[in-house]
Image (cartoon, rainbow, N blue to C red; front, side, top):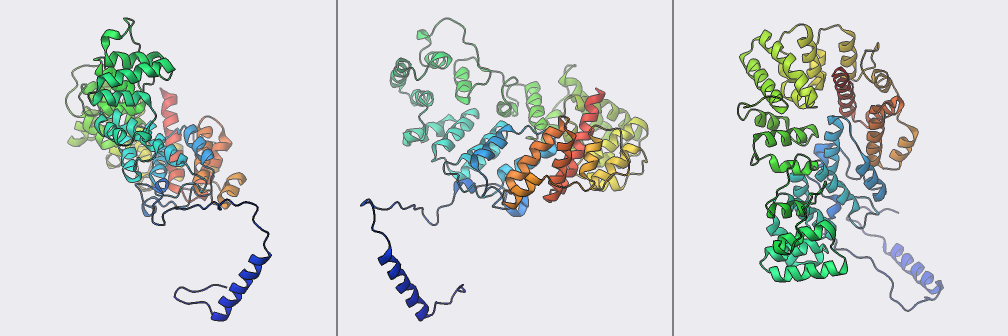
Length: 490
């Protein structure tokens, strides 16, 4: 029996329910224990931090329950293992990690939120991760650990140490406690904590030597202190405090954000911007702004790329087709060698489609159009009748190609747009309400397909299309074929 809001149950029905409950209670077995029963409780108005996000369902098109019925350990493993081969997949993954959505029902220790934050950090999306933590708060030790790493990475140690001083339970990291104690001016106490930790074996090796030199260089050994391959943000700041700052270029991607301001020189700034743009973690317009800050004073390596892009930009602004074609042929291989063709296409794909060019330059302009966000509209305007153009145009429109093209993965991609069905396993998982997990598994299939397993690539494209992710299916396929073709030519 259902009751509409605002209506009450009939009195006779309520009495029947009461009598039935009384009889059931009298017939129930006697309790076997005098202990009070376990009662789960939570404030009714308390938001779940695991559901926090920066992007609403209206913006993402994703349901709020996409993670709800999945196992948190399974999701964590999938997120950690993902190696996404094309920018379109990385862009969609970023949306999923920032989307407002309920966490898995069995996620009792914020494992899924932690996995999302870790992925954002690993991709160099430091600002986004910090913005997400602003919503969730950092009262949980797992979240505090991530927040303290991000804050130390950006050189903001004061709020970390204040929070740790106010609530020591937030972290059991003795190294961080020693650092904060010294930073607060109590060097003697910091040294005592370090000595005790070394005696108990809680801090040893390079970390112990690094903290010793930080607290009292005279007590340190004379042996050189080799920098770690993957330093923690705290170790990075300790090396900096010792007057031996670590260069960020060989370090993991999150450290690249430190050079975006240009404090370590324009070359370091360019290299950092390229690393982040390559991962899809820096807007193309910002990359262009850094490329065009000034004239390169040297040649070779990154300077040749900067010089070629600046010359192309000048030619494009002058509007002379012959000059544009010449500079396009020069800048294209430079951007390809830097694995930056997609950011280049985002910047110039539409403008190049409006310029009349012939020969190789015209072919490069068409490829830039297919790699741009306006790929479908630009494809409809193409008049070139080459087999490659016809094939790519069909994919851009979501149609089955009429004939094959000489492009990597062409056959597997064509099969994906020719009515292939989503794999049965993914259909079963989708029927169980595991939408987010199904998308992640389709991404895993795509990565396998990009490595050479054609059936996996077909299955991934079919899965994306069945899930309504048509733009993702098209852009991923276009990027994979064009970028792999460019790699084969180098």
